[in-house]
Amino acid sequence: MKTINYIWVLLFLGLTITSCEIPYEPVTDSNDILGTWNTSSINLTTDSEQTLNAYATVTTHMEYIGFNLNQQLTFNSDNTYNLTGTYDMHASFHIVTTFDNSSMPPTEQDIQEDVLDFAEPQAGTWSLNGNTLNIDDGASASEMTVIELTANSLKIEGDYLQNVTVPGQASQVILVHAIIEYVR
Image 1 (cartoon, rainbow, N blue to C red):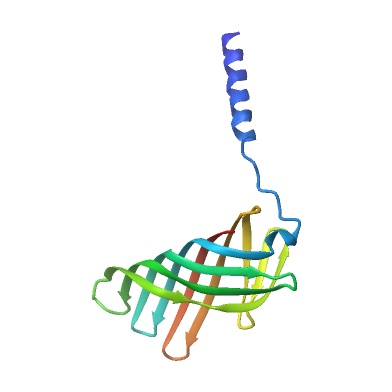
Image 2: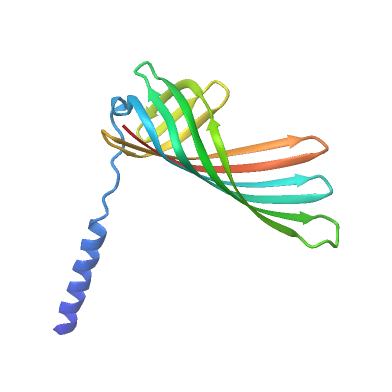
């Protein structure tokens, strides 16, 4: 009997613990996002691999953390947006170069630096469908996931993949993962 009671306690605790996870409700009203938001956190992770034809492969992992955030994002009711202001970034790079067709060993390098007064003013259109935020500045379109949206907090997350090729010279694949938080 003691074993059965023990099993019931474990089952109850398991259900209680898993029941405490509150799934984020999808955004149902795009009016919730309207207005001006101040950037409170920027975290970017970038992984890239560049192949220099018949010479070397350069793999880079980069992490950027924003500070001195003075950036505003405004969503207008006509589905246009404006991104203005500046911010600074702490940047950390880990670079590995592998030489093709060579007996040279790979080289590794770690670099840390601050990128100051980073500005990327943008204007374009936006749409919100459920938790999917689409942003188009006319040159490129991005799809972000709204992780949190309250009266005073907006958190978005997204990935961006870019392939760049210079015929006869190099090719590069870049993957960027971004988490950006805003407050009113």
